[in-house]
Image 1: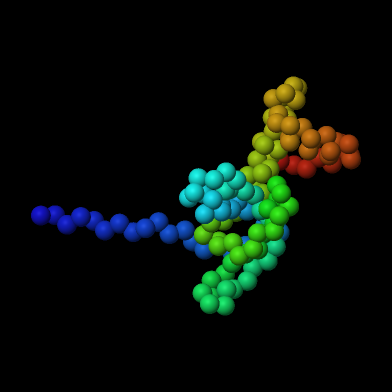
Image 2: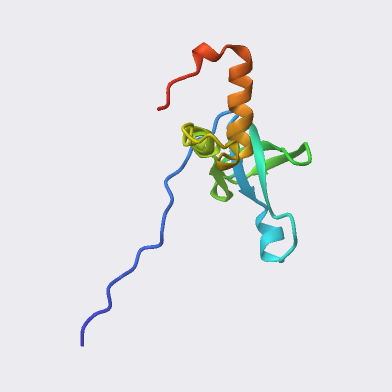
Length: 125
């Protein structure tokens, strides 16, 4: 009889966050209880090591409610990279005459920069 292959649990590499990082975090208790508002966006305020477990935890500010959340386990946090937030602007169809083809964020960014000095628009990456 053939032996079944052993499967390894998926392990996510540890991510270190620094103050100011924007993250998505999940209140795991609310999630498993099926309660609303379990996944929110936060900003890292500080990190610290728990005295008993020696595990690094994070204190965050929940951005939607401006509420402090202390002792967040990084296993329930994911980074929200700036490149993802800026993707619509970076890929805006600048050759389109109709601004309706661009997202509102791209149009707002362009208007802000055009209002400052239209000769110094940054190059596309």
